[in-house]
Amino acid sequence: MAVVSVSMPDELLERLDQFAEEHGYTGRSEVVREASRNLLGEFEDTRLEERDLMGIITVLFDYETTSVEERMMHLRHEHEDLVASNFHSHVGDHYCMELFVLEGELEDISTFVGKIRATKDALTVDYSVIPVDSFDPLAQG
Image (cartoon, rainbow, N blue to C red; front, side, top):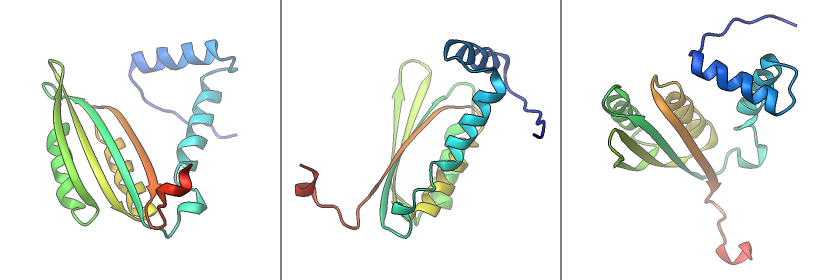
């Protein structure tokens, strides 16, 4: 097995070690391997390929210490064909939430989510994806 060096803040490393201990992992490498498999598998659902999808993405960031808001604006303009709607809200004393509604295919939504996740200083990134090409609310019952 290859050995990989990863840089991360001390606080995140402490949380990783605590998680490994609390959940019975043999160590941080096992946690990182599982997290990597999960991340890579997120957008590999073949049932969603080549379908019209709607994606909802929320991003939380500290507006006083970062340039995340500027990055979100650039991504919104860079992907204007994908972004159907965008909402910005203040949360608490120091935070902002950016919400994106996307309409497109899995590959495009996956790329957009990846760019947001790669944004330095984004505190949380959450998303959901649902097909809208054959949406039947009566069939949900």
